[in-house]
Image (cartoon, rainbow, N blue to C red; front, side, top):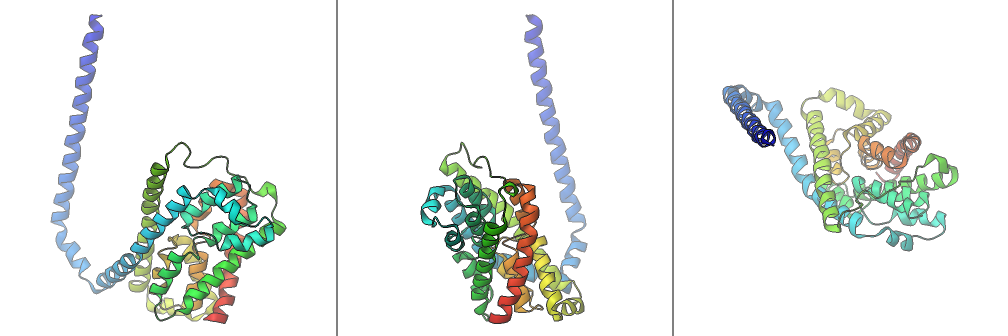
Length: 333
């Protein structure tokens, strides 16, 4: 009995000492970091004052500041739809005929790509035809009012970009929906088995969705702004002009760039606008491909519907998006 009483205080004291040691080590690291910054502030200041870095920072800040309000508004709206709009609403709104449900789903409520995948999963789980749910998955991030408004602001001298983005994105989404209805097999699609916010109140699910999407999409926005600034300020202009002057190479290059950057659709128009060396058609491909298939979307689609589905759906979407973007660009731009 005595041993038990003595063992407990010794454990508490040792635990308290460990916490004090951790606090001391953390303070020491912070102090050393501040000293390091103070010592190298001269070289850092000289590096930042270089013309190349000033140009880089100007482009980065311009892209980020312009895109951030639209990203926040889009995240809030998509969280409201994902949490407060029940999947039964879509079941009532969509026609029962699958061929007609596809284009109606393409014009459905907006949402960013981070929200469209779980919402599409919820639609499939509630019995909506997969073709309509997949059309919603592709179109919701690309043609919603927030995205189209951001595109108009990013391209004030080219208002036709708004119509071209709307038309090309809707055509790709509907074409993929009809292709899945005609060629898709049930064993390719693994229906999601449970909602992601199960057990949470609506308020907690809403703020959880907002926090996740702001941090997630904001991080990709930073990466996208950094890439655009690097292309503008660091990459030799001759290289960009060589790629931009070839119509096929320019479209393919910006389509691949959209997949790699994985920028949120509420912000990608400002990155595309900064790539002024490329044609409007090539930048249209960037705007159409990005919201439909990029690295993060491929991972989310594989996690929600299965790897077999993603390995078939993603390449088909990528190819069709490039072809339709080139066609719509040739007609409207």
